[in-house]
Length: 98
Image (cartoon, helix red, strand yellow):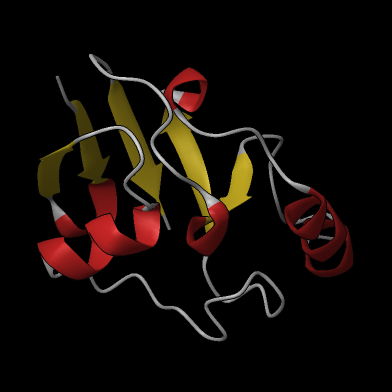
């Protein structure tokens, strides 16, 4: 049982099992989505979840802090840090735009 992750900017899609990180998905798919620190501190990997937020792990404290710092008027309520998200549930579609 997998969830389909689509990276809109790159016209890529990959089916992954729950527990996979979005960072792993991006690296496996060949996407050009940029990463900086890979630890949820720099904000380089901010993405918008266009569809499927319910299939992702809940937002964590690191994400909340960094998004408040870097997203003054520029991010949506669906913004997340790609390095901090995991696929949480199977049988869905997650669409990401960066």
